Amino acid sequence: MTTGDESKKVHGSKSVPYFTPEQKFRAGTPLDPQPKGTAIPKLFSPLKIKNVELQNRIGVSPMCTYSAGLDGKPTPWHLVHLGQFLMRGPGITFAEASSVAPNGGLSPHDLGIWNDEQALAFKPIVEFAHSQNQLIGAQLAHAGRKASTVPPYIHIEDSSPESAGGWPQNTVAPSPIRFRQNGFLPVPHELTVAEIKEYVKDFGLAAERALKIAGFDIIEIHAAHGYLINEFLSEVSNKRTDEYGGSFENRMRFLTEVIEEIRAVTKDKIPLWLRISASENNDVDPLAWTVEDLIRLAKVVREKGVDVLDISSGGNSASQSKRSKGFGQHVPFARAIKKAVGDSLLLAVPGGLTDSSKVNDLVEEGVIDIALVARGFLRNPGLVATWAEELDIDVQQNIQYHYVSHMPKDQIEWLIQTSK
Image (cartoon, rainbow, N blue to C red; front, side, top):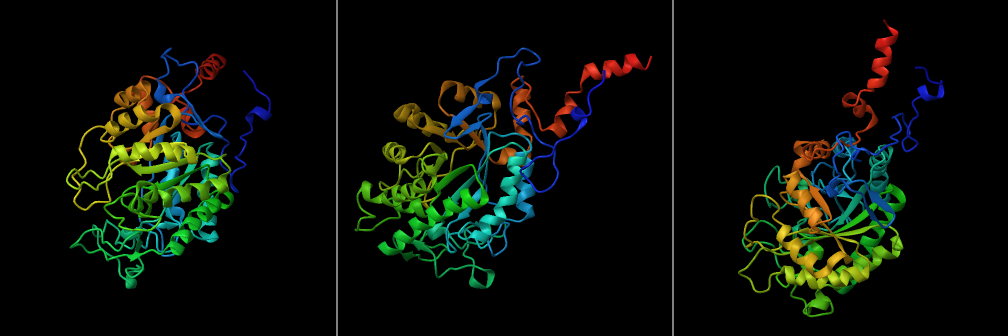
């Protein structure tokens, strides 16, 4: 058994300015045919969204790590953090929430994308993703009244002072209502209409940087967890009487204008995701946001150009009840939303998706389209391969890892025979 010289050459990826082997096959793709003849579960089927195709329905959820310097730029740490997932083949990996304005980070150590230098610092991460033949998404955010906090690995829900890089005198919201009445976070500045318009533009400019400078494949708007957009949507935090408050149509205006601003940049070519709270998990307050509100909103954002709803919950009400523990705490919301919107919107769902068989059942049933996992990937960056093994299928791994468990038996046999 001999081969030509060209077949012995290792070609490098053209996506990065250094050598790393070209990945001809995407990690996370089921082998075809399967060695055991097993049918491929839908969790490992491809999914086309606009101009991209996920090789499976498993995604790395955006996770804030509070690991940037005060300049908001990603560092080699972020490359290593995200790279460990990107090499292992999830259908989509999201970078963490990146602020669209200097006062929009959850903490002084959040990532930002409000200037070109920050976008350029993302580029090596995106290039690495593409060198691995993988997709990567940007999540655009503004924390509103929950901004300028101390990183939670130091203290939960505490304001970061100016001496630590915070901006406690410059947090903003639709109304001057602090998150927790007797808490540590300050009363935010009530935005004027002119200021609201500027933040709409900030989201659009951030999307443009994410696509044109950094090169991200997907954009997600963060409108959940009590951050600025969520604050406008909910009557709990929005007491305005102008065109951005009061009626449902007025309260969703900021979000719809942000979507329109971003779609003006993407031209309906790039997949647009929306992370949204399905509920404030507060049955006591009659003003709290509910899944019925989201169903009403979903039909509007679909027409505005959103492709995927990323369903979460809570974060805007200090008196919310605890999320249920156990498997799939957001699945009941997904069922209700899917029943209302059908296939007109794809649903990505995070939260306690720990059992691969149950997750696949949800995808097979059509309740969810994409399973998003955070803590599971932190515990096991190779979760895609683990779930594949649990579902009794074999998936492609990156070229450097794949051969270890897929030794070419024909070549080994040839070597044995020729050495006799």
